[in-house]
Length: 281
Ligand SMILES: [Zn+2]
Image 1 (cartoon, protein in one colour):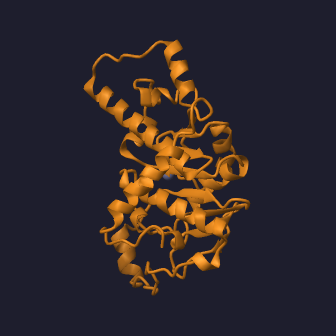
Image 2 (image 1 turned 60 degrees about the vertical axis):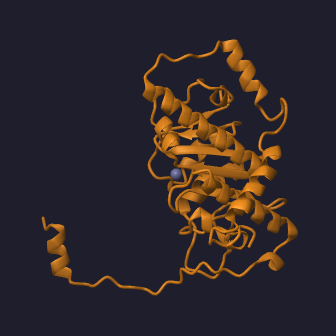
Image 3 (image 1 turned 180 degrees about the horizontal axis):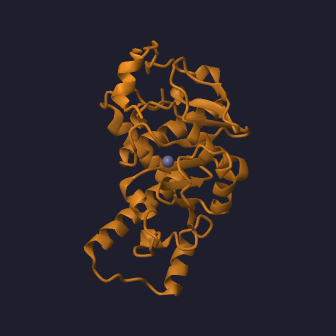
């Protein structure tokens, strides 16, 4: 059998270079979309920036989607941009089947697996407006542990009885996996994608972000605790159940709503001199 260098010598076909437009200087679409869509674009662009600000990005990978209120249309990132480059006008509008309805003038497209993972959740769960997926180091670490997320900290205990798990099936490009993703998520708003990463969703971008922030923090604490190899302290079943209940959206307040305004203030203050366009462009 010929090895790779032999094949290269035999074919001698130079790699074709097709001129592509990868500029990121997008025109504003504020005046071309409904006020509801523009608001959704602002929220989603801010969420991408917050995921970056809180260290939960993976180069250009991963996705966050937001449903445009009153429609079956979703907003998603252009595949190829850093999260810190994403603006309201750079977002792509797609339908639940993954068809692109509008996008900026650019050769960047969307990541198909983003639609596979997110589209089915939006389709099956009308209560969900935003779906967020990450590949953080701590999230991936816990996703590879047979024990899953342990109730070791207050931040982690809130997920007791409220965390789903989905078996790894390879890169999410198989449409048949969508049924199993939806089945495994059930009524939960947080899911560990085994050997892969984390997923959260919620009735708003702020709530989905807040849940991801907490899930991520819980994973980081678990990894630290387990690395320390100390004997683990776990509260009683009664305390676990009570704590988990008190952190559910209906019990006291919807987490992520009060926090959102402070998140936006931090984002706006810290991105002023970043050199990147404001998320609100
Ligand atoms: Zn992924």
